[in-house]
Length: 257
Ligand SMILES: Nc1ncnc2c1ncn2[C@@H]1O[C@H](COP(=O)(O)OP(=O)(O)OP(=O)(O)O)[C@@H](O)[C@H]1O
Ligand SMILES: [Mg+2]
Image 1 (cartoon, rainbow, N blue to C red):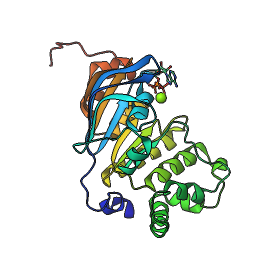
Image 2 (image 1 turned 90 degrees about the vertical axis):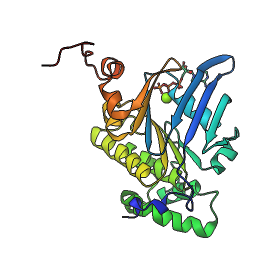
Image 3 (image 1 turned 120 degrees about the horizontal axis):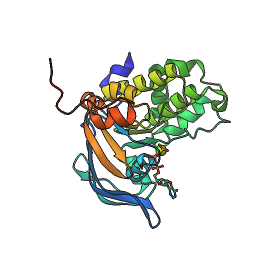
Image 4 (image 1 turned 60 degrees about the horizontal axis):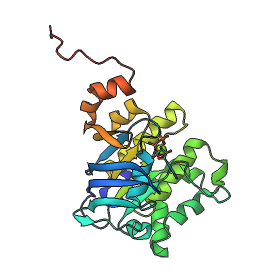
């Protein structure tokens, strides 16, 4: 399956994307949401967890240039530009909350728009690749995007972002409002994309499922990071277990039988 071919998603042999963020601050007008945030998005799949209003979307917006930011952001050692166009050209793509498809256009047309920066000849090839990677969308190529199910629309949004062959893909709550089976499918897609060579930074509210597919994670609360680490370790941490998995913390010094 082409999806597993690293060449399919990495730009001609360039190294996998590695994002370093130091002292990032961002907000809306005078209202600062993120204060002095430092984090790292290594190749693979990184998930950002946190309650409503924590600043997760704000973080993705700041990294994709949709809002102003302060601080240092480096993509493979080079300063990331601040203008959205320039950021996109560096291979950073965002699938925003709410998908933002063109409902009156077909699936294929929506995907083609995702490849607007790509030369026309190559665009056709990318489209064929997208349909290989998302066979469900191939069957629906000529259906109006607005008439697809929520999960299918989310899939179109991800496939459209992949049309630009990004090195770093940012997903804002890809499973929002979807049925459990569809949630699993979307998270599996994110995992496959990461395995195929595109670094993925994903915001998710499905904490348990997200940590099961991710390599690493961060927990954001009120604009600050409160926990981070390997996904498997985070899933067992008291911060995550108490606040997000509805479990009581294990006693700090419980004697092990
Ligand atoms: N355009 C805006 N103008 C002013 N304040 C905003 C704007 N967008 C978001 N905020 C505020 O910024 C804070 C963080 O919002 P953000 O959308 O980043 O949270 P989130 O973690 O993505 O939450 P959710 O899980 O609900 O999506 C909130 O207090 C929100 O009200
Ligand atoms: Mg959000």
